[in-house]
Image 1 (cartoon, helix red, strand yellow):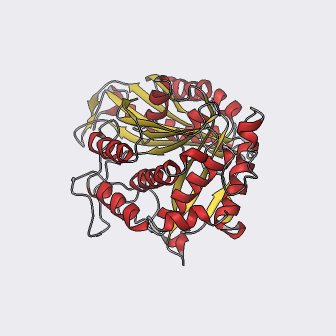
Image 2 (image 1 turned 135 degrees about the vertical axis):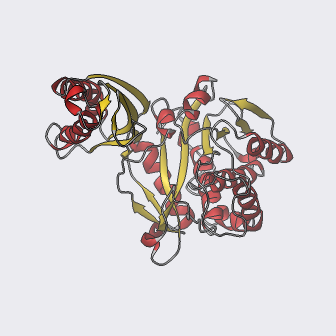
Length: 408
């Protein structure tokens, strides 16, 4: 049984590649995934599944029902693309200017469709239900919350998902219990000064000088107010002010991202940032306002679910396939599901077999996914879900999730 999922997924390779390339050619931004969702719904309908559409935006939800009295295990894939001009040179490059699947969500969608096909063919042997979640708007950290708000986790016992990683060779996975990815928050800072001639600065109050001081001082929040053992990043990504080289403007606007790896540390950051910004501004005779927007929580894998997922990965692809994932402050709104339901999120290698660490990373205009990862991703998603329902590569037929009513 340990080779079944991968062997069957390998037989779907041509279909998985075709689906992924079609999605890659016609990418859609967050909350605009109409055509992508329509394709997903058509494919699921061909498998005999009933779909809910327009869920949390353009999300698509379908249940593969085996034993209706058993638990529900959810699998999730994201569908949206990024506002990036593609420069990969691939023959199936984006045909939509300024929009690109530079994060591989086209591959995630294709993999979950592949897993759905594998599982739907075995639904009579499932000791429960697999819920498929095709999600909108992960890139803007809004899709998971919107889906949850429409009840997609009702009755769900566990949830699993993956993300491709081009700096990890195809054929490899990386898994980690506990915190895996950082929280994601947004800051918007407004600074009010007084405009003047650039040659007569004493007649004005310069918001740009003030903004420069704030940018530098915010780094002391990381280096002097946070333990070296608690990763935090504060990045100011945009500064907008002024229109002429010889004019001191009256105002300045900045936006930035704040990342943390510990929920307790994260809770302390808004007050600390506001203190630094407002007092630095006061020292520069300016007025400042801070808007702190909490977006996505720290992604924390549940130990029991991670152990089960790791065991299934070993059985399907072999223990040499699995590595221990390094923590990262990149964010993922899969964390919103894990706040409510036990589960595990893991990395799937999508890079070249050699020198993968030199590959273009996620969100790069020359990002290129090694399509050899597609059947493995489909097999792992299907196999993990089936195993958690009592039928799969690790199952002896009893099935702990279905048998005793307890989650990992």
